[in-house]
Amino acid sequence: NRLVAKYGDEVDFVAFGLDSGADIKRFLAKTPFRYRIIPNAKTTAQRLGVFSFPTHLVLDKKGTVRYHHEGYGPGIGQELEQAINGLL
View (spheres, rainbow, N blue to C red):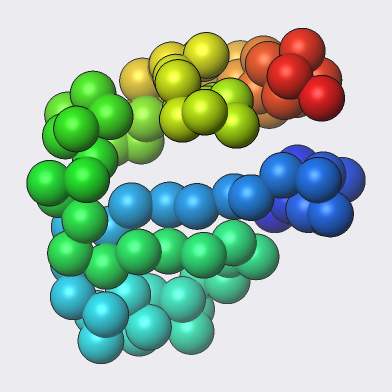
């Protein structure tokens, strides 16, 4: 959400959900995210090389994956920010 607040006017933030839209809506009622979540997106995620969650991707304007990281870890926010800045 912090990166969405900072880059939301320049970058589209999207999450792929494996669950149905109704399940995601219930989840978001408890855990708000400020970006779009696409339900039932297993096939789309797999096409982009996402096979575990969480996976963070940064794509350029042509849809080419420029950054890929699986899982959490210290500094992930900073890594994502550097990848985004490198494309702006």
